[in-house]
Length: 246
Length: 246
Image: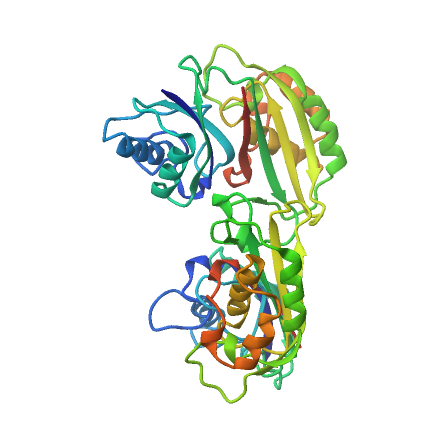
């Protein structure tokens, strides 16, 4: 039986999503609990993709196989009763044996949160604290240049060697918080994201918002296909994997 | 020179505001840093009042004396550069030597946050997770009975012996979150609050919202002047000292 889970997590105390030789990871916590409820027979989970250390998820997805057929609600409660409070299973669905949580992804959505206002200790691990005002209209112009199909080599991890750097960004928008005008969210939806890609895009967007670059620089950077032409990687704490679509 | 500081903190990793023989406290952290910048001459701070373990502050206030005259902004930066990231000094003001951060309080405001919707691991230490819907109109009726001058003995800590249990609540209101209809905040503003008073009021309000009691029960409980007649103490994580007025 193959199951698809939708889950959220606070990434601040984890060494990323993916299993590691050392450090706590989200995958490890879930696999440990699943293996336990599977009578100690090893269960492996396959997520839509990894998230780096300190990055959060509002709706991450993963699949795994269990011999026994479980009632979805019962499986959800069992998992949540055993998982630590910073990981929460929102939904369990029975899916076909051909479904794959990574290979079948059609699109993914990320959100990046920035606070331009006064520092709030309660949000320290959950938003990027930027202490100056940003020119939001200029950032919105830059986001228009990011939308579409481009080679994003300039925005991925410098040493990430891969066959294909072309991705399509369906949506890149900036949302102003109506309650707190000093907080913004940048939303990206696309067919795929390479390592550090969202955080590197945000790094350049912040330079644009602070006046160090112009919105049109996005075009030059994309064309260069060279990581050294973009900017700093924005901190992990502001990033959320918001949703995965199949 | 007497200084008044306004500060915020994430109470989730602290054993409360007030200095204790064991465990980290907010007061201890601030006094350690102040003593350090005062050339290791002991500095004591006097807050508007304590907050219990796990309770947060949006704007707590305290005063202390320093021999040397400091520029307010410089003192603020020095303190913030030395304090842990879960405590933040928002403002430093020079005040008269007669000013007292506790004795001069005119009113205080507390906020209690409740989530009736899906559990969110990111908010686990910052909102009370209540898994059922609450009848908000019935709770609002109850809040009307709380406003005014009453003997709140039924709502304070059972063994808290004090001379006077009478307090005036100027405002007791319920705020619906416009973005997330499953989240509410209960705001209390009054001339003083005894230990556990807000959390004990919220405990009964939740019983009223869940249909276990009627809004009018507030009147009976107040009249009883007996802690056993009210309800459970609501968890610390939902409570914020929102502001202190002089």
